[in-house]
Length: 293
Ligand code: HPA
Image (cartoon, rainbow, N blue to C red; front, side, top):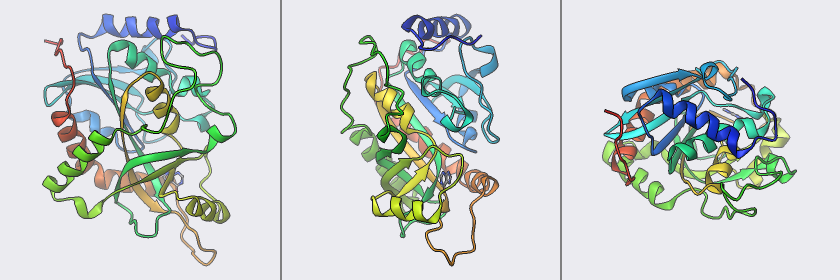
């Protein structure tokens, strides 16, 4: 059933209550699987999964490469919830729908959000298949007032004017780098600035050049809204972009990006991303109460 907007605290609580009455898992970590990265959820132990269509209040995802279900379970003994499939602004969802799951996760007790996405690179030194640890983001829709935090603020979630200068947790970024060293994958791991554009079209060459000049390392069509809402409600955030293509910045270049190519690179790297995220969850400190038996 769909709730009327603006959504109230009770709408989020209602969905959280439904979930808590359908699974014993009480996750501390939420993981959003980006385009083609749904495999991340397949490693969960003692899984309980729910198609979005079964969860009261949940939007439906419509994009190929996004399965559309919540999977609860344990990774390295820590209780997690994975979103296999996220919601995008370009699907026509309001940003309060795009970020609806984040506030529900908060009410379930989640304190750490891991976001993943597929992105095109602007940085000249990046290659297709690289993994970028997100240091910071630029939220282009936000510049024109398109933000999930617009509208009346509910102090039970967070403050009216949240700081975003520490949006991506430094400790988790360090830990991820150390894990990459141990896994022997540092040669294709970067750290950089992600930029969200509205999509669904890929960039024109002039737009790509503009983003490059602005200091953007990778561009995609998601992530910033969820990260804003997670920060607003006090969650710690870690983000990864998988570089699925180099954004064309040259009029002479005949290559054009397409969604199938994006999914192809995602599946090539999905196993290594799964290992990285699993190790990160295993080594991060959370107050895990391991309720599910
Ligand atoms: N641009 C925007 N979004 C994307 C891209 C891109 O080049 N690649 C994957 N998602």
